[in-house]
Structures are given as C-alpha cells and as structure tokens.
Image (cartoon, rainbow, N blue to C red; front, side, top):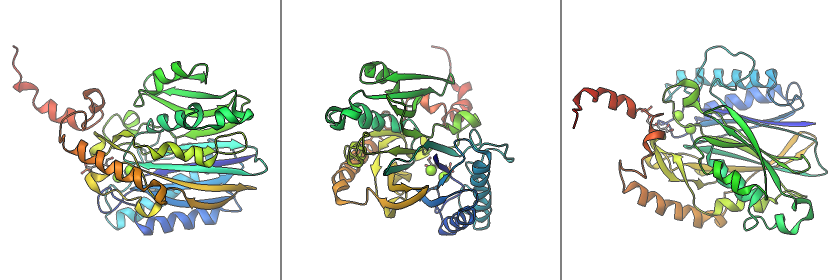
Length: 361
Ligand code: F6R
Ligand code: MG
Ligand code: MG
C-alpha cells in the first residue's frame, strides 16, 4: 500500500503574507531528501502563497507519528529560519510548542490517502492560499457528482454507480456519508454551507479512495483569529475515476470563496501556475495551484504544473474582473464576510471596545 501525505503550514513569509522564502523551501527540501529511502519513499516541496507544502509518499498509512513528526520538525526548523530573517508571521500556524504524536489539531493542514497502486495511478495535489477548507466542496461535487462537468459519470460503466462523500461538521464535530447520485440533494443541503460542512473523503461505490482533503479550522482550534486555513487536497484520476481533464475542469469557471484579506472577505478563487503562486493584490486574490504526478512504486513522477497553461487564462481574467467588482464594495457585505463568519476575525475586538457607546432605543 502507498500513502500520500500532504502536510502544510504557514511558518513565516515575505513580504507580509505574500510568499514563502527560498531559504525555507531549501531547508524543507533538504530535510525531506534526508528522510527518503528511510522513513519516506519520495517527496516534493513547494509553496502556495505563504504556505509551505510538504508532499510525501511512504508506506506507513494515515496519521503516522513518524511522518507527522518529520513534518513538524521541518516546520520547527523552517520557523527558526523565518525568525532569523525576521520574516512575517514566523511560526504562525504552529499553535502548540510541543509535538504530541500527530500534527492534526496543532495548526498544520493534513490531507492523506492510502491506496493500492493501480497499473498506472495519476494523482493531483491541489493547494490553496487565502481561503478555507470548505472551498473544495464545490469542486469535489463538480468532479465526482456532476455529469455536466464529468461525462465519465455517464459514459464510463465503472463510474456509473457514482460516489460516496464523507462530510464533516466542524462545529459539532460529527460526520456523515452521502451516496450520489441518489442523495446528491441531501449532500448539497450541507456542503453548500462550506464554512461548517466540509467534504473530507470521496470514495467510489466499491470503496476505492478517490479524494482526501485537509479540514482543520485554525480559528476553531485556537479560539482566536489566526487567518484562514489555506487547504490542500489529493485526488486520484483515470481508469474508472474522473480523468485528469475532468478533475481540473471545474476550475475553469470562476467561483467566489471566503478568505482573502484578513480572512474576512469573499474573493474569486484563481487557478495559477507555480510561478504565480504568490499573493499580491489585497493579499490575494485567493489562489489555487495543482501539481500532477504519476505514482510509481511510491515514487512521485512529476510534477506537472497543471494551471500553468493558456487554457486557464480566461478564468484568470474573469477572476480579475470579479475582484474589481467585489473590491468596489470596500468594507461592505457581501465582499466582507457575514457577521457570523466575522466572529472568527479581529472585528469582535473592535466591537467590544464600542460596547459602552450603545444606548437603548
Ligand atoms: C489572510 C492573511 C492576511 C492578513 C493581513 C493582516 O489570511 O494572512 O490577509 O490577515 O495581511 O495581517 P496582520 O494582522 O498580521 O498585520
Ligand atoms: Mg501568513
Ligand atoms: Mg496562507
């Protein structure tokens, strides 16, 4: 069995919350290289905006203390570099000082998947900055439950029965499974509210794992504003799963997500190549990158930078137009998040100071 673990954290960036420093990428690459052939089979280090992304393959399964410790050690060492260079927000996502066996609940985001390698196994790793984990809901639904996006659902007999979605409720800490197509309306009733209900896994009806996402909500863990979670997800494709082209097709339509400036604004989710995975305008706009690999006996063959392509130019330009329209709203909703979601930002501190000024009417 092969395991893919994508573990990420913002451990400091420059300038401000824009991008990961090359010295940090170098350090992380070097540490994972050292572990190759030992604890892990293969690795690839990259960044999306201010988030350091560790992609690792191994044979130890999900939630392995050794793998999580390795990631934690990388984040600690990289935080030290961030501190030396006085990078912004050094160690920002490391909410605890001491590692206790699993990075979940400690700040870093984790998407892991265990599978028996097929004769040929294409895997896509999606990584985002300046948005929340629920951002994947729309895309996973399109990939695995919408025949208008994925004709394979209609044409390929292996997919005809559909997929099962595991949905997590991050407020009440519970989970539920929905089978599509028969329960797609029930599924949408929940996942259409992506700040609370997140798709964690997608399986084919025969149990084959197809997708896995990171679902940690930093603000809920920390109980205070610590930015958005900037999620990652791993998706398998082809031979009885949506094709690579079907998996990246939903990103050709501009969709608005929560996050952006101060984790407090709706903005367009822009698919970009690695060279553009740096947040600029208004600390954004929210961005997503996609790296494609073939998995060969645990080795990562690749990556291919899937959105570094003129085929995605048009959606990028539409995203820029949407960004203009939303920015024109300034501090007004619906650019600014709803009051309920603003509870997890720094706005309540401002409101608290004004409590005494209010008089009854
Ligand atoms: C959003 C993000 C940034 C910061 C903003 C203010 O996730 O990281 O938009 O929220 O730059 O940062 P501080 O409060 O650190 O000055
Ligand atoms: Mg940051
Ligand atoms: Mg980030």
